[in-house]
Length: 84
Image (cartoon, rainbow, N blue to C red):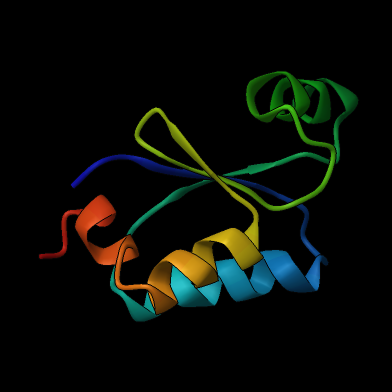
């Protein structure tokens, strides 16, 4: 299973939805909280985006929660996560 990383904040509702989606699938992930300016800058540099969450599966930048949920609805998320 590839490493999953989520750049997030503690209170963001979309971050919570992303966590729940991955938890429902039984996927472990590393969460990087971006409250510190250097972590936010790291997220922006890596993803090219300035919103949370930003989700990576391996080296692939999935995007935010909506992008991840869309992949799931299309049946493309499970293969990316190594679940099928």
